[in-house]
Image (cartoon, rainbow, N blue to C red; front, side, top):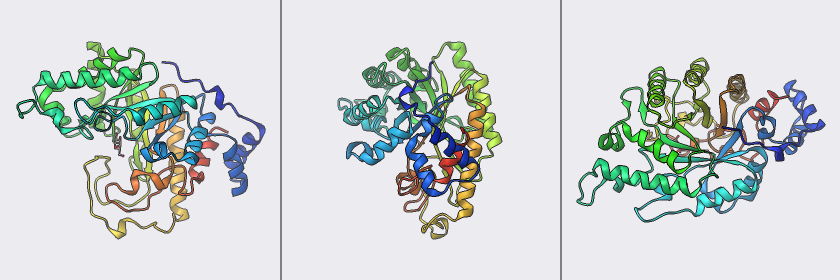
Length: 384
Ligand code: GLA
């Protein structure tokens, strides 16, 4: 599938190139960095490599936060809705549909010539529980649940047919422990619920890029399971086109060699790679490193050490981490289709509240004042 062309972002000029060269050499002071940031955007720098996107939350879009929306339009050429297209948001009851926020996202994206990622059609989380219940109050039959899935997917994908470039069709349905995750979907329909989801999405928009999305996909067990699943899908003619790697990463884990191996493994079975929810958590943790959404932990002061600012040593590590990540992505630019951050600035990141509420985290490229961080300039400088 062709990449979105972004000629409207072609604002390359002498000042930008000099700024980048200087940034690479560590020569820019903060004033000239700010001048550079105002000149161009990351999406422009990476326009011949892959799309660069961000997730937009309800407050930003609906209030609306025009300063943030301007920043997003300048820096990115792809957007994902953080929540508004999930089943429980867009279709909270059998005959209730909420299209206001998704429509607004489409309007914003189209006005700014940005690609839209549909997120997400089938997931065990953020889905109304009553879809799993039949009219008699007992568990829904497989036939009924698949009918509901078909109608949901046809309505949502059909509404934005030709306008949404790519959909996350199924989210987080494979675990290293169980293979297919023990969910209501699996219990009622068996693993083929995923196959149906891909088929329904393809029927509704045959041109759309269809993705399986998950977290910690560098885990060799999860990775190998996904690779085998893709091979089987290809044999059966199931329309799957890409793997979405959420990439909720930490400063020290996972080992980026493993992460790169996962990119290679998925590409080796013909998949396009989308990095769908990138952020780098800098805070200490005492639970397993996982983006498992049901993880909940009680607040601990010792796990919130940077309330008053990020020490230089940690900021340097974050900058280096982002530089290493983008070096890998550039190396694999032939198979990497898109890199989406899960949010834009640190103050609005879910990582301040997951898995415990009320911490001060620094996972993104823009700080709490919405200014580009050192990590931003390191990522930009790779394209100098
Ligand atoms: C998962 C989902 C996202 C989001 C994050 C947490 O990664 O795919 O939609 O809910 O969890 O914010």
